[in-house]
Image 1 (spheres, rainbow, N blue to C red):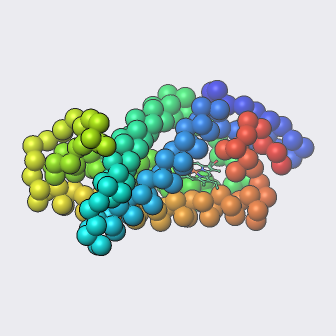
Image 2: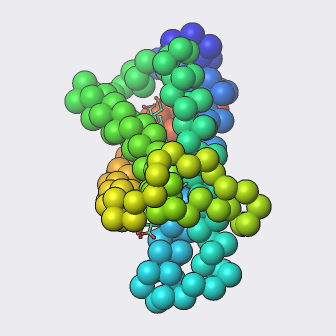
Length: 195
Ligand code: HEM
Ligand code: HEM
């Protein structure tokens, strides 16, 4: 709970997320916002339309590269969260809302860690480790195509669960901001609560 900025307004004291926590949150958002549509498009072009041209291959390379970067961003983010903590819940939240948001946050952390690992294991098993013909990711296992299909199937299923959680999460953030008009979104955007 250290490293957080405190802002006081007439009604209550609101602790904002620290600058590094905010930076890592919005960096994750940008990377996931690229990964999911690129993942869906490359899979549709390749496996559904059976178009295996340069564009499809480049989409796969971008997906693997950005997913690999995200893995290290998430590890850093989780380490920061474990060692530096996070601000206490926004004071106007009901206990069930605090519990609900925590469950969703932990589930998203778990998926953001598991998904790139499964992707990396999947391309090691396939094997399809090459990125733009520039370099290859290190192989984590021996090739096994049948297992690769199962691992990448799990990767796909988790992608849809993550997407559902993100939709709920963003919906709640917007509801807090525009509906309840509290500080939930402000403290993830700025160092001081505004309301
Ligand atoms: C949090 C990070 C990641 C997210 C959110 C994500 C998301 C996705 C999505 C939405 C798809 C499309 C699913 C489908 O329609 O079949 C996909 C497919 C795929 N992802 Fe990821 N991905 C991530 C990380 C990675 C990483 C790090 C790798 C490999 C190094 C990877 C390799 C793949 C591959 C090979 C496919 C295609 C599977 C197929 O063709 O059946 N992903 N991913
Ligand atoms: C890829 C999409 C996103 C992911 C994976 C994600 C993930 C997370 C996670 C894991 C946390 C918990 C932070 C912590 O306490 O350690 C969080 C907090 C938060 N996120 Fe996101 N987020 C995403 C998109 C967004 C967007 C688009 C918004 C705004 C519209 C948003 C608003 C917030 C807010 C306001 C909090 C703080 C909630 C609180 O104070 O309890 N997030 N997010």
